[in-house]
Length: 316
Image (cartoon, rainbow, N blue to C red):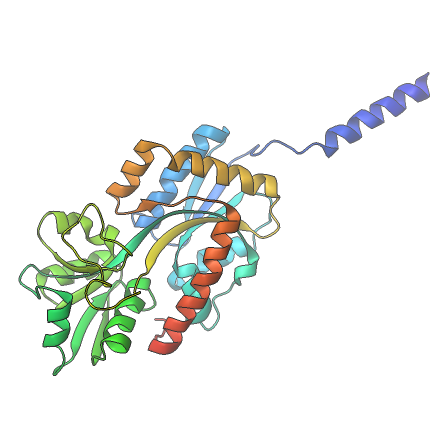
């Protein structure tokens, strides 16, 4: 009898161990590889609040800056694949694998969870500047064009370099600023004649009439600024790109955890208040499955590698 009881207890213990443990059972760290206050950080904090409320444990944002985002990204790549280290980052992830000589990570070291939202890049100028993208290009044929961006290697930089140098054939001079805020300020005051930035950074000033939008890089016009044409409408068919923000886990993280965070994010993005909040930041909710995001990332790596190669862009 004692032997039978012991066998039953052992079987019950084995069955309990075989059951997946609830997730999470302790605080989770969300690493953002950029400084507080930027678009990626803002979206990460919105998600952290949502996850904390829904999953019963604190999701804490940890800003790990440096090397254009590579420091924080590399930290997640080397973290245990247990679901307790999450990465929320931007398009820089797929750009830097080509742009940086030693980024400190490889794409295969991550499990894509979900593409949260994206925002087109923009070409903007002071209210007294050029009236359109085509008039700007025409006026720059003889003397060339100086433009600003949030920094070397950012998607707005690569967008403008490819558009003005490779497609329009202009002689260009790039002025890299230390972030979107100083770049936008330079465009607003006319310190540089034109600036390339993400929509999210320029939107408040566009609405306030302190900047003029010349073109957006989205496929269609943006509902909040319907008077700004797309780059495609301005004479460059097929041209489009976005700054996106996505959620990642270290490769090898159990699929049940990937699915849980994916499901919670998609449920959140389906709420009207979430859409309104993201659109207020200049972003459009995306969502979808991990597989869909993985396929999109493959295409993004190829696309930005071509842009880096053809423009000859260098990291700071």
